Image (cartoon, rainbow, N blue to C red; front, side, top):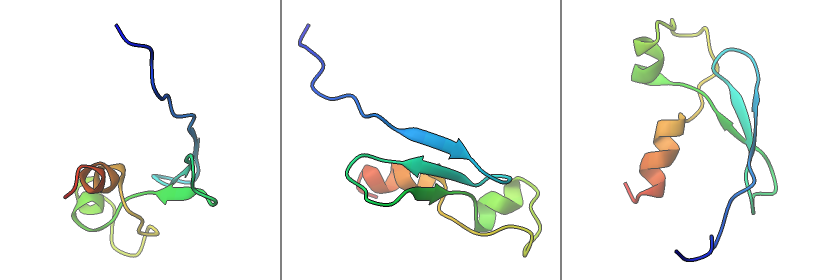
Length: 66
């Protein structure tokens, strides 16, 4: 088996509620993850009770090219 070519060093901080701050390689500022729209509704969040941010699922889909 080949040697590991890359292993990211990522730090994720849980903030309030569903908000998380991720420190990602090559990004000068942390990225916020959270919930919005239908995802927030699925988890029982009422409109106006949360600050909308992209979900981790949004980033996964975006990373695979949509």
